[in-house]
Amino acid sequence: MVICQICRKKFEENPNYPLKRYCSPKCAKKARIIWRKEYMQIYWFKNRESIKRQKAYYKQIRAKVLIHYSGFPPKCQKCGIEDISRLIIVGNKERHGKGLYLWLIKNDFPEGYKVLCRKCNK
Image (cartoon, rainbow, N blue to C red; front, side, top):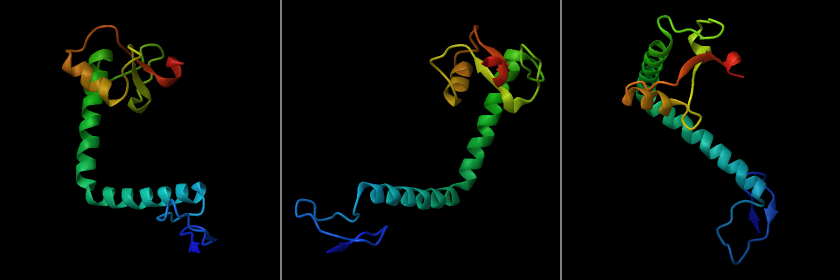
């Protein structure tokens, strides 16, 4: 008899799979979630300075693109809202997120993109 590491139930060991530690896939999934949470806490603690630099760099890149496409201060081209946290770039549906901002800068700000707030984009 083997004891599950998550729910502490006893279960029969499978001779075809002798290293099984959990009684069910549900317990195995819980164990993966616990492991990932612990791993990420350690990762964030060890790399906190690097993560701060990356966030600051991303904010600079995003602000540069928004200012180029909508002027200073950045604003929605439909409703005029100036809250930078609500603004997004709209254009090519294939690219989005951080990759889009870096791609736009690398390709010298191609035409066909505009700045909208999330509400106007719907």
